[in-house]
Image 1: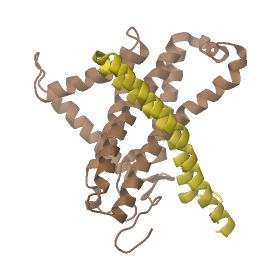
Image 2 (image 1 turned 60 degrees about the vertical axis):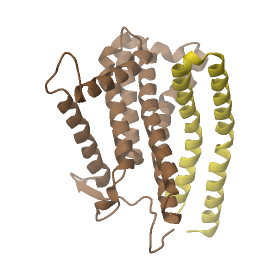
Image 3 (image 1 turned 30 degrees about the vertical axis):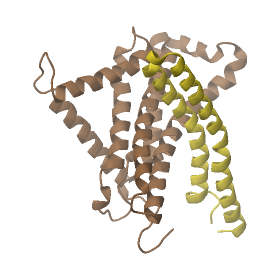
Image 4 (image 1 turned 90 degrees about the vertical axis):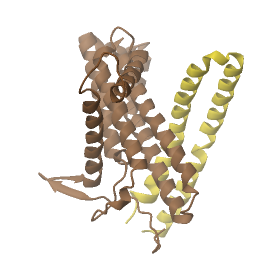
Length: 233
Length: 82
């Protein structure tokens, strides 16, 4: 796979060391850019609020409605409002990260080691997001039920105890792997196709990747909201 | 790397992704068929049917992705290398 014209390499990262920890620098750089993009659109869209929205405010309001629709469908209309920021953050971050990773020509910026790509193609990012979901459904369950939260481990019957405990581990695992696998697989397919036939053949795969990555953002946030709703009820 | 280990890893990677795409392929085809039938029966419910279909397809897709992750892990982050 390593020719002189083009190369596909998986697993090379830009390592930064600070305070005794090693992080993947290229993931952090793109993450900061994603955060900047989301904040810019949010701040610009809410600068001069008008009663009848138009332009960017209209777009931002429709995004908000969509995200709170996701939360409302899964959590129920009496309890969903406090969770809209969290679900919305998950959806927006994953969506914008995937789309920026696929659409922006990152290759123009050369790093000393590794290359810039979607931050969700790193298992660390997706595991962090799914652990956030885990923590928040635990938090929601404790806040709503106190110590009665543990009753859900023996429902519907005590035989289900090992399965329910296992579920607490498989939920974040499946969330993180689904997102990570989708994004990394699409990037690898596109890069291998660019290696073999760089002209027009990678294009349908890239379009599929854009579509699939937006679906993955929706699935991740819907599932997180569903887990939260399930532990609150 | 030990040639037996690398040979076995290559075969395992191919089998992992190949086999794990059979089941979800059947499942997704079934889901799409039922969705199309529901759409034919009641075309006004298109929005809901399409939303539910896409969500279910993503879930089934993730089962194949698990196999893909194992294959990628064997090829690029092989724990038995060296």
